[in-house]
Amino acid sequence: MRALPAVSPETIGYGYLIWLLQGTRRQFALRGSYSQLVLVDPPSKLVMVQTALERGEDIWKLWAAAVKQFG
Image 1: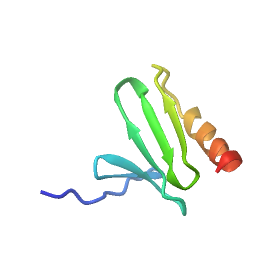
Image 2 (image 1 turned 120 degrees about the vertical axis):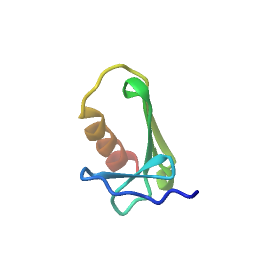
Image 3 (image 1 turned 180 degrees about the horizontal axis):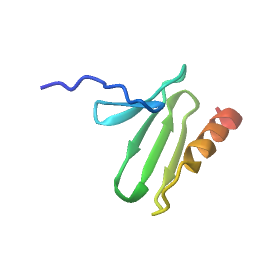
C-alpha cells in the first residue's frame, strides 16, 4: 500500500517515511528518537545532522540560517 503525503499544521508535512519541508526548495528531514535529526537540502548538497538529546526548536533556526548562507 502506498502512503500519500500528509500536511501537518506546522511548517512541515510527513510523506514517504520522511518529512517534506514546505517552501520553494526541495528539502526534507529524517527525524528519529531522542531528537536525532537529519536535514537535507539537495540543491545545495547541504546536510546537517543532530545526534543530541537536546529537544527544542532552535535547530530549525540554525538550519534556515545555514541554508541562507551556504545554499
